[in-house]
Length: 343
Image (cartoon, rainbow, N blue to C red):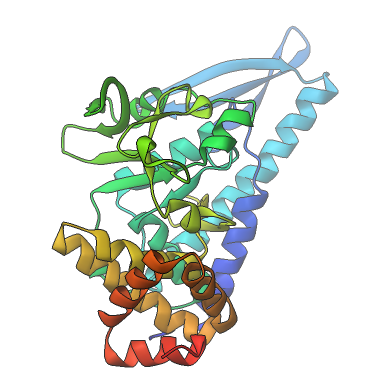
């Protein structure tokens, strides 16, 4: 395990706090600016931004309106914060922390701004794994960070009862890349849980299956995702229960909700055993190993608790945990045994 220096850890903590505190105006990009114009002896606020090579301008309202002027002043504070966050992101990337590829960054930012994380959605998979470098203060290496997809999860019960909905996911994705299309589900061609662009980049929506096997392999309709689908998966409830906040190093930092690192590590040991694709299984183990080595030092009690929770579920889970643990390096197995007191 190689730690990042304390200065970078401090910068990451500041970035997380600033990103979570930011409340962007839904109508105005933080990259634009308000300008004050006079007309017939009165001052008016206009909003100006760049779109490609063109400068756009939109009327906002009279400067004499206290609520509008307050809004403008608040925006100025947020914009200053955005610039500071951009500086922090650049410094952290220069320090060696992982950053997503541009498309992944834009997609996650679009879903964040659309309200996905506010509606208790969780970023899972390798893009979530990337954020643990800052969370744990360790280097993650390069190979476990490679991905050509983005995975998002939400509990069906949350989606059904939260009382709000995003735009249809395809609408959000196409704002970033117009080539995204729905991939019809094999069990129901009228529902999609997966989206693909022209370069075979995939976006998947998932939901835990804590019920009957009858639900497995059949898309679940998600009310908070505008009635579109999510793929029900076993073990996913363990992963996304009680997640934590982090930030993706894109733009000014994208605040995200991700699984707790200890849950991610233990979950990877379980799902690696079920994988048919051996390359993905090996990647699961590699990610689990990196996190276990860090957590054994940084969060030993939390790692032990997550392992104990999974172990107590039942015999099938214990068999998978034992099988996954056996695929770790000898040193990592010893570290895990030392934390869990289970040989």
